[in-house]
Image (cartoon, rainbow, N blue to C red; front, side, top):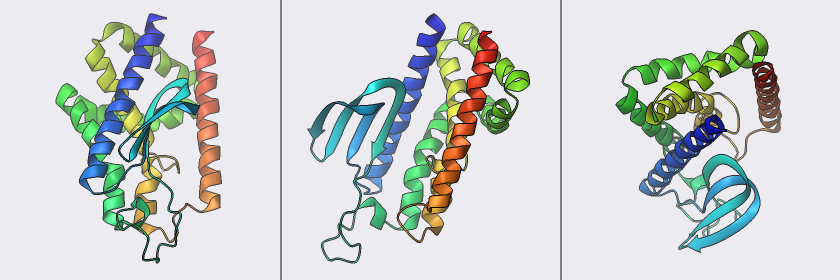
Length: 220
């Protein structure tokens, strides 16, 4: 139970830090976010502060996020707000996705030194190989992760965990920054093509199944 609480608190801290960085970047680039969310699922509570809604959801998965209102008018219409995220220049939309993760990585480097960079680099292959080979690779990785949670100081474990979260969010999956960065640079529409969304959903499902299998192998 202590390990679960440690991991939950670390994940919550990581996602909250990323969201605060994202909020600062968005405001700095004049991209107006409309919502800050905590946890996932249906809405439990919401309060508006100025133009930003603070929303608490029902399912306590350790996640926070910022969101932008969909553009509900013709982008060529005179009434279309120039500061709406979808109407910003491509370089500003890309920075909104890149800079929060870059800032989080910079914090990890400040805490861990170059170990943060090597840990992030290894994480790309670990995430994929752990899902593809759940028993031979995934389960031992989980075992090492739990051992780190037990042995390392909280700040160091949290920073190491953050490097893995950063790597996951730089994978080319439609829901995360690794896809959004090239999409925002090259896009011809405001939403990804259906085939990319479907392929990304399948990839996320495959990762979830693989790591779920690895977790069962670790526990048994």
